[in-house]
Length: 365
Image (cartoon, rainbow, N blue to C red; front, side, top):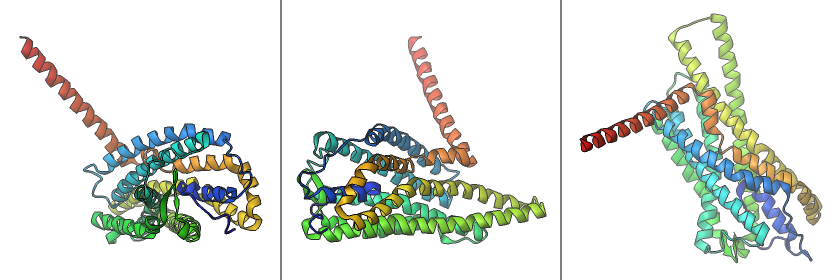
């Protein structure tokens, strides 16, 4: 396997392990395996810009609403605002990768990274992976915050305050940047592409597969989110049962129900994250095990499942674009504030048009 681990290029995160595997398995083959363009690739190529544009517009509107006067003081608004920003950055970076994949498949060269130098490769790769991890771990922070909110609703923990939420996001960003700092050292410009330096090749592969993909992207966030969400759902059903039995209508009951509505919205966001990313991450780990058992022969299986991998990559992209629509469907306060935003814009446009018409009328007479 050592001979096959030369010149590993840097792929796009959620499908990165498959990219590394494919390059590793084809290096040294004579003749090399042809780079086939599958139906899955074309579906991904056509639909990615649609998802990216929809997601950027939705995330921008989400950020505007979350920063409105009525919601900006909420702790969950800080998490959702940060999530909208990193999701938008992730969508832009994924579109860049899709364009690069197109040139690689059609012209057999990486046009996007052709003009990069070592610093450009290091910076792009670092920002790309930090952005992906922040989008995932912000979901973890929200899951923990909701766990505290549901199990101890009347205690004001720092994580449930605006300042505490901001501090938690900053600490998370610093920790993730530190975890990906190895990319600033090991990533270099290799011909027309960005990749790992030969000196660090094996360490880079191990860090990418086991530390980044398996631990930081899969085991830890998925495990924490599933655990927190399970405990939250248990507590919600328990409290609802007690409220039905008591049939109370006091202020405390209304406050608890309001908290539960917010919790349900955030739970949908969390489970969407799991549903969109889990299939690709699971296939990644299963195929990694298959490749270790079968060695270079795994390339034949990879070629067969390649279109389905492209579809799963596309599904994972939906996770970064769908949150706005989740907020609309499940968030009453969000819908109200969104209507206010559009109403305010309509009023401003009307006033501007009226003022301009009045000035023209006065000028004429």
